[in-house]
Length: 345
Ligand SMILES: Cc1cc2nc3c(=O)[nH]c(=O)nc-3n(C[C@H](O)[C@H](O)[C@H](O)COP(=O)(O)O)c2cc1C
Image 1 (cartoon, protein in one colour):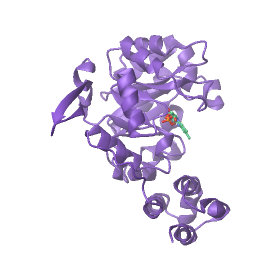
Image 2: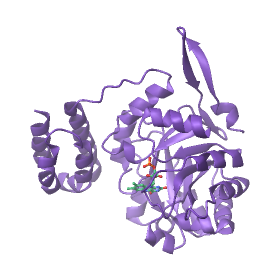
Image 3: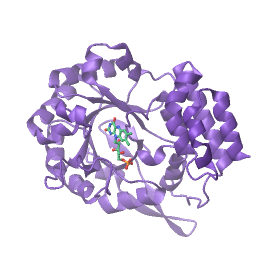
Image 4: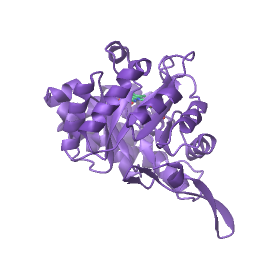
């Protein structure tokens, strides 16, 4: 289905005011009424983080990238990425690899769990270890193999197949529009574009013109990604690029209530200008911690992951810098709670 038919932005009169009325995205027969996505982030988008984002309104989340090779070997640690007990809401599983047969088998293992709404193929990871191995962003330079992977995964699963790409490898080779068209022809049902090159990593600004160019090159839905930090960024990205959905990554870290703001905007309501009070953000941080303890089974293990989150949650909170060293050393819930209470007092 041509996504523009279902994702057009129109204006409706409401109580005399003109408000933007947005309609959802259809990826084949998968309806996504609010196409706002939590980005896949390795080391971040584990079930506790997805759960806390969901509680604040994230409509669709993505897992961290999962190794196709690991899935095919049925590695215990890799299979743990398929755990959805904590957050059974709409979730896309992302896999990475370079071998079409292996990717198909991995996708089939994921689909077999019946826990995911779609499979996403990572063609954007710039991490050296991944790229050197021929996966992630390396596939942008190998369109034949990339297309073969998409075809194999499509043949293996009935779920919609998404592909997440970057603009290109370097700024001198912006391949996203061409490769997106090739992947869509090979069966990709939706394309997510992180509008940075692999060489950029996460620095510099995302060039949203590449998202517009991909949108013009394909008929399948396009999800824009890169530098959305607020509802006004999301609106601007949609308006400037015509993309069908928005994906948010780093701005949600230590800030999961951003999804509430995005949904308020999506619903055409006024987004409040006031920021969330420190006491409330710290309470949310503690709830995230509780999810993590439940997930990891021990406070010490939970704290290993939560340290970085607490640093983000306390960013901008008065006096937070003074407790950072103690946050990094904390190993129990009680310790972290005492520190957090000191800030919210
Ligand atoms: C810590 C971290 C881990 C990431 N891991 C993944 C990943 O596993 N798969 C993926 O496709 N992108 C990954 N990304 C990229 C994000 O999904 C996203 O494309 C990028 O952060 C740009 O979006 P943003 O500006 O909203 O953060 C990661 C980004 C960060 C910061």
